[in-house]
Image 1: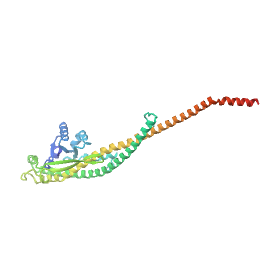
Image 2: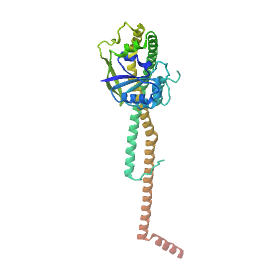
Image 3: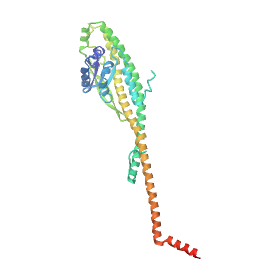
Image 4: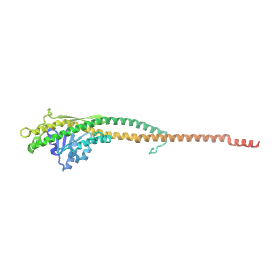
Amino acid sequence: MYKIAVIGDYDSIYGFAALGLDTFPVVDTDLEGAKKKLAQLAGGEYAVIYITENLANLLKNEVEKYREELMPAIIQIPGVFGNTGAGVEGVKKSVEQAVGSDILFSNN
Amino acid sequence: MASTQVNPTRMELTRQKNKLKTAVKGHKLLKDKRDELMRQFLDLVRENMALRLKVEAGIKSSNINFVIAKAGMSEQILNAALMAPKQEVYLETGKRNVMSVDVPVFEYKTRTADANDIYSYGFAFTSSDLDGAVKSLANILPDMLKLAEIEKACQLMSAEIEKTRRRVNALEHVIIPEAQANIKYITMKLDENERSTQIRLIKVKDMILEDAHQFKDKAKEKALAKAEQ
């Protein structure tokens, strides 16, 4: 039985607590702490980890590490400060990796 | 041309022929795997993109709702309202095999029987905007989980496609041509050896016959006798 985690800045994620997801607020300035938190979440009982795009941008290497593993699925979501397009970029990256070039979404 | 030296022997020739056969068969199979993976991946990734855009739009609008809700009440009350969530979401995970790639399957369960049991606060002290905000977030949760499943599948499949593509290319452009070149080299070398053996045998036979009958001496004598006449 797995759970779902949401990690990011407090303002972007506090709403998810009401739905029954586990929220883990971290501050941008404490990168080491965020890294540790993510590793801890990924190693345990969480099958899906939603991470704000801002934080994912700061923890690129860590997020990348779990990309090709079955669990957990680390999914970027836009934060309260707006959509950076990183999530869409991730999908395009998948296409690029598979096909060699982005043939599906390059025109929009 | 073969970069590595191979022994021009029959045994090596058999080995190379077997290698070529395996490589050709493997190439065909891997190519089929790649094509099928690619077909499924493209379908999935289109769905992924559509879902992502939908989820992002949903989160954006619910974020707006939350900001409005937050503006209408004090921080303490908001924190207290969301401090002890009633609802909890569990995931039942499974695996699905898509052309040898294991992709996760999520099925979610809520702790209380009613999935809409999401308001973890009394309605007395919170603004009604908060209810709407929580509801809007709850509405996109199923899509978010579907997104997690599909996006993960896409990531895993794209990695597998890349690997398979490299294998296909390596077989097509390195292993198979190399084996063919080796086979050609060995066959030529063996043919060459056979010809040289044949020539040597002819030569030796000549020499042996010459030894036995002394054709040359006899021919000379004949010529001499002719000259004397």
